[in-house]
Length: 394
Image 1 (cartoon, rainbow, N blue to C red):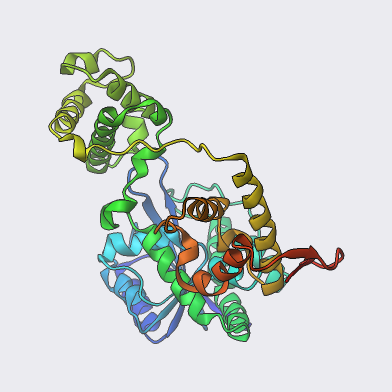
Image 2: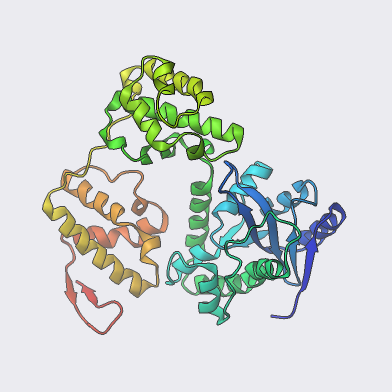
């Protein structure tokens, strides 16, 4: 690839010129640097953009409003190439109110052509292009100005090879007739990346990941859910990480105690006084819910021993299939998906709507094979121990 201009965009005038040049490109490489350890919303510190003839570093701390830039990124007429672009998706939503329309994630595409998933950017560049990238600025402080020459070089390298990788991976997808698979997968990842408030109600179950929740009954689950949502609202208002304001274990302990007054919350060690009232209000909201509005208790696995055995067999068959068909196993399905599939067959109930195997290309290309084995229509034998895919399915 020919040498491209490297341009640092650090004032409103240069930003306007940059956007004018970007508007002429129908494919852009996009990355960002942000710091999110001590805020609720990550602090955007730098934007990196690649076109066929130039690389740009846009400094959001000095350029002024970036509205024109974000409109370019969400324009469906322009393909935006990223690597592991979850945070870039969230930035688009946050600053433009829109999700990306024409998105190409190199990490996902690599998994769809048989490479490891998820693969880091430097590993992908090395594996596909034979180029070794520096990692010395991985944990750098991007909020400090001026940026050092080393930081600038590192930031340019983050987008320098995106378009070259896109051309190669898109070509591999075309050879395997998987470009439509990729488009659907990118859309799925965009939906997954969005903040919970903009996702369907069934996806808003983040509170269930709190440690210790398994010991709570339905009434107390309702309390901990309201406490969790109240803490999220406080954190968003103050732009601070939720766990810094109120620890997870305190939410669980409040729900367990089911306090009768704000004073019982305030008496807990580690509880800041200013958060007592909003947490008490959350407890009160939970108490007003009728029992049919309480969350269900998620039963712990009580599977028969043969379930694990059959799941292991399906896992081995899936690995064999993915090696033969050039797919990443970890992108195709999880062991949890396989377990849900086995459970549905044992109970004669439909497969859960959340199971990834019943959607898109997986439903067409993967699920029939697993069901054939699970329902006894196909058997497996070892055909070639030397082969990456040693099984034969008959």
